[in-house]
Structure formats: C-alpha cells, structure tokens
Image 1 (cartoon, one colour):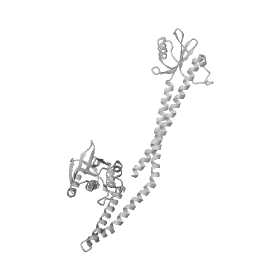
Image 2: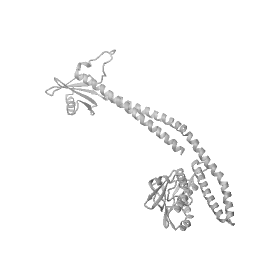
Image 3: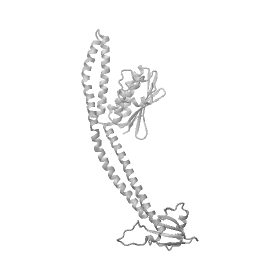
Image 4: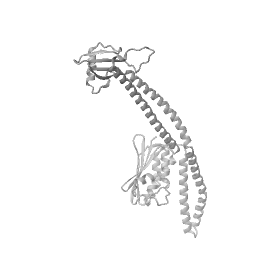
Length: 399
C-alpha cells in the first residue's frame, strides 16, 4: 500500500511537471517562431515598398531591421518578369524566375511559403505592376530546429532532476502515513495475540462444561468463543498480509495440483448444503508464489461459495490458461445478485451487504484477505454478478 502511495505521489508530481514543461517549451517555440516570421515579413514589406532601403551599410552601423538572403521580382503590366536586389542568388535563370512568379500567382494570400524552394514570399502592388519579394527561410528553420533540440535536452534534464526530487519528496511526505500504518498494523497484531490466550482458555473450559450439566450455556460460550477466535485469526492474517515480514519465501507452485487438493475437503461440506461442486482444472499451470497463501485464497473463495450459494444449485470452479502468460481461476455460484457498488466494496474489510453477507458468523474479512494475497502475487481479483449468478475471478501470472 505504501509503495503504491509513493508511486501515485511521484506519478502525480511528474505529470504536473511534464505538463508545465510542455506548456513552457511549447509557448517558447510558438512565440519564437512568430517573432522570426514577423521580423522576416517586416523586412520583406519594407523592401517591397522601398527597394533602396536595403542598401549596404558599414560594419560599425547595425541595421535597423533584420537582414536575410532575399531577391525581388518585378512583374510588369505586360507580364514580363525582371529580377533585382539581394546579391545572394543567381538571377539569370528567367525560366526559374517565371516558375516562382506562377507559384505565387496561384497562392491565395499576399504572403506565404513555397515549401519546395524553402522561400517565403511577399506580394505588393505598385504603379508599375506587382512586386514580389522572396526571402530564404532556411536560417529561420535552422534556428527553430536548434531551439527544439535545446528544449528537448533541457526538458530531459529537468525531468530527471524533478524525478529525483519527487522520489525524495514522496519518501518525506509518506513518512507520517507509514508510521501510522506501522503502528496500526502492530496494534492489530499485538491485540490479536493478546486475545488468543484467553480465548483458548474460554474455549477449553466451555468444551469441558459442555460434557456436564451446563451443556446449554457452555454451548453458547463455546460458539461465541469460536467466532471470536475466527475474527482474531482473520485479523492476524490481515496483519501478516499487510506487513509481509512473516511471509514464507516464494517458489514455483503447481497451482493446478494445489486447487485440486483444496477442493477435496469442500465436497462433503457442499453436499450437506445441497450444493454440487463441479470443477474443471487445466493441468500443469504453475505460478511463482507462496503455496500456503495461495491455498488460503482458494479456501476463502470456496468457503464464500459455501456460505452464500442458494441451495439446491451447482457451484462451478474453473482453472484455465488465460492468454500467453496468465491463468484464470473462477468460482461461480447461484446467489442473490449484487449491485455494482457492492461488487466494488465487497473486498473491503468488514463490509457486508444487507442480504447475502450477514450470516454464518462472517466478519467480512475473508475476501479482504484474498485480495491482499492476490495482490502480493502480482495478480488481480474481482467479482461479477449477472442475474442470479455471482462469479469471483482471480487472474495470476504464470511462471
């Protein structure tokens, strides 16, 4: 739980940081591109209106506006094309110049970009015809590409720096929760251990009294003590599942054989309640886990079906391969239908529905324990309800 809380904290922080970095770098790129484009267009309009404005200047006199490689085409009233200005291009190819003029003529706006030639154009009407100014935008695009590379580099460094900082902050922020969780877990374990001894004494004496003249009251005492012992054992199981410190080391487990063994003790119990247990277990399915915990999870699902199945009916247990590297265990029985809210809350501790989960001495801990066990084995557990059928599903990774 604490690991998931830290991970959620880091994910939220990194999501916010990533969004902020994307917005900042996106705005930086956008305004830089717009600024370069506006400066280019301002230069081109000035040249189109006053061609002599772009005369060469002295090195110690900075230009009044940005200077870029350009050339100008003058299209007369008769359609003749003449080129001048710039000094960066060879303007002797009249066929090529005519092609550029035709491309601009087909363009709807007075400004635009000829992607094929990497040129931006500006069209201005004059008394002598139409003047076209072309500017090379390769330098502008190179600047934007360099800006993108710089932003990606800075963004990657910033992401790694914030990731390290988020990991440190997650440890610091979760520390009070971790302390409270440890204290709660220790309290449950200590209280459960303290209760086991007097409960054992009460159970033993009640069994002795039951053989004498006080059989009635002794039976009530024994029944209540057994329920309390079941509650204590459930709390201990939850404490062990939460802490994970007392769990045996994991190893390869033949889940098919384990489920087959777990089913055997339940067959006579199901028969007494007028229930038929039907199984389909695919052989050879192995998982990586702790066999005692997995056996406990299977027992919980079978015991849950025993308690809440509506007799007479059949209970179906299936264990099959699901996909390439997963297996699926399902326990399906006829029972009172559950609402979507109940299907979600049924795995919470001490949760019971009004009709189907309030009898047979159940404290609402079994499914919570099963969820802890399945989660510790990197699997997932859920419940489904359709008409009068309730099915519990456990999906585990195969080894």
